[in-house]
Length: 395
Image 1: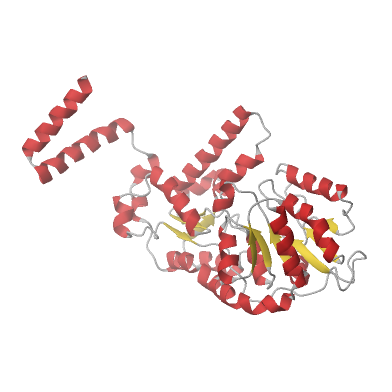
Image 2: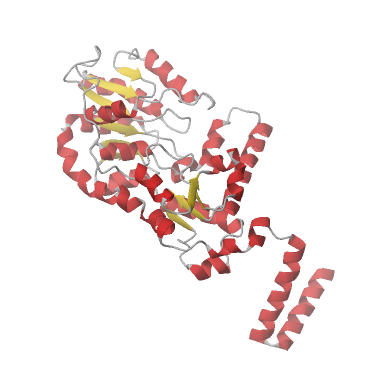
């Protein structure tokens, strides 16, 4: 199990080890190119729509550099599409996106269609699941940290401050929230990316500066770095509201905010922006409030409503979604591929790995088309179409 999300359960590693399968991400494939040659079946995780994230990462760079970096990302995903034997992604939206990539790289073809007309033998949805156990529930802030009274209510931004997110609307709404709930505390996790090689996100500094301007930084607004998993679990349970806001853009449409799944796990009512799949879950299961992107008044009213209510009143609504997102159910397509299903048939044709010359493909396609017309429409139809084609070419 190579380069996989630490939050994925160890049962996934056990599953892969029981079969002749290697599981990795496109970036791992580039970092370790020998993986293209291994004999094991290769499962590639396309959970992260990193091509769209990169558009945000490098937005401040010169346009020519942006274009080069974007082309590198496209080449990487094309390499993954040609190399993998089976692909998994995070949602049905993502599956539609990556299906187009696989189609462009020749992976959607008569062989793969004949094996499975749904093409789920080629790519299926294996997103983020919820652990079977309850999260670690231990008080880490209330009544312990000097700025957190025992009776305060914590609004938690439970993930990173990335440039494609919208923490600014939350901070702008905060003064109005404090006017009714002066004991409320706003906590941001992931103010700094744990990987020093990842470019610094401008939105994190903007959030910190705005908190200073309204006079609430380190008073009622706190920006923490990453916590150990056990402490993070405890904070999820200790919090009263979980928030995930974003502007309207293409990354939102295909992303899955794992922080929102964490809120579900901890029975934490959520305030989210519309447009991504997580907002559909919040709306479908009635687990909080969905607001329009960058709508500060809507954020304010939703936060007030959540803080006015009792957190425990939301708890019964989480049972159904926890069952739907149990790891044993989420991982089923991968389990079936590793232990039951045969490999994808189209990968047995070595020419699909190496590619086919455009010249050879053109002649083969023309000959195949001629045979099809002859068999289904007759010799005269074939001559008539050939003559029309000749006239078009010389015109």
